[in-house]
Image (cartoon, rainbow, N blue to C red; front, side, top):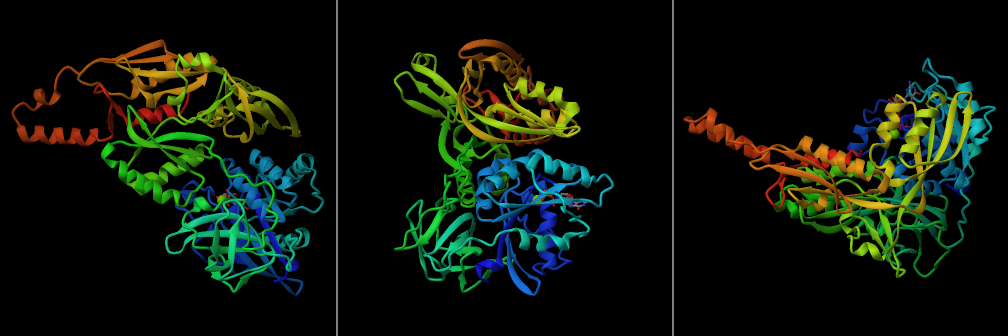
Length: 600
Ligand code: GDP
Ligand code: MG
């Protein structure tokens, strides 16, 4: 296939607007998968993704389609659907020349529609609006067309309206892509230049990279170099995703395919990196930056003898997800564990679920934190990824400023929720930047918000205050100064490092009291009295206590019957496995960490 008969495109949509369903239909229509295939949503391969109905890892598939007598090679490049992965979204978009902007014709434009549109717009792609779900009684394609016209200034005079579910109108989508998406601007005679836009670990062959070949071509046996790491590799296999790997003799300019290079770990496969042939360096693709973690949390085994087991499980999992950063850490309260960095909280939740599956046990996941920066009066700075690293009171004299990461959030919602949502953003230290009506009764509002404020209960509040009618998306916009303090939890007078958190001074007392209450709620009575105190920068602001259990209950009820008593004690022992014993003998249930993660 010469470049003029290749089209590289993606589908972008708000979650649940039908991206996976449309992808399945297109693959069926081109015979790439069979119609009665039970394996629907072939692009959502991972189990967690299916369970949650989200796409975390992008998948790509090629299809062949005859249009007006000519065969075309169409490469559907899937993008992760969630904002946590926006860097990966823009890199996968960089491998395309066009995109289908799919909008649910009942729901209309949502926050991720807006965020994804601007990512595609920023990559200078041909954008084809398509209205989905027109089979539903609530569909209002005219209204949604007008929203698209007003918000994105796209031509909707002959917009496609389809039902990905029933297949209605879907046959018009591929011809539209061929006509409106540019062929890749590729130079077949120039030296090889390829964009690495996705990778995964395969236990038989090692790392598999997805590469968009821009110039030149690539064959088995070629030696190529990563512009970022300068590592060189021999290409041991390559081919197209059809939708599974099909080996081919070469990948030609303009094509998209998989490449196996004997790379040992996906940590060496930097999304957005450029490959070139050894000996003929080329200009790298612009905009490359390694994905950076914005949410950090500790993960610890409940029982410290399981540390090695946890480490092995982590090693196996991070082979496949290089966007998770891992550092060893130790906690006075929890012992040896790890500080993991994620792209966002959804990423963290998905990873923890996989980890628990892989490790076959629960892990203690401490409350997530964003990376804060401390600037010292002597001009140096330090990044804090764990509240335990927050400067202590003596060190405070040397601190010039604390900085926190900020985001620009986009909210889309029916106008009746304007008041409640302004309250919500205000309560999360948001500053309004802009709001516009996208039609008679839908508002798009922009707020600058501290990233820490959207980590915990923001989404839940957004849903509950609007009965689920508001959507939210964000992008990072750098750091700003903030008045930060540390909240410590003390159990029987001892600060528990794993329960500390960093918050804005204005919220400190409320968070301190709330955490103390919540802990009291999940901790059970023990043989001695437990006091729970919360302190803001060393100043104790509240105190709760849990009275001691007086007597061994079993002694009373089962006095004579020794076997029943033993059985009951065994049961109790098994139940205790989920408790972490702190220094001083206080036992914390795993639930204690979960309850604090939910924010306040
Ligand atoms: P994604 O999150 O964008 O990938 O959305 P999915 O493809 O997973 O679809 C979300 C839900 O909408 C699923 O339950 C689909 O069956 C349903 N759906 C997708 N397209 C249509 C459509 O055209 N009509 C109707 N009625 N439902 C659809
Ligand atoms: Mg999907």
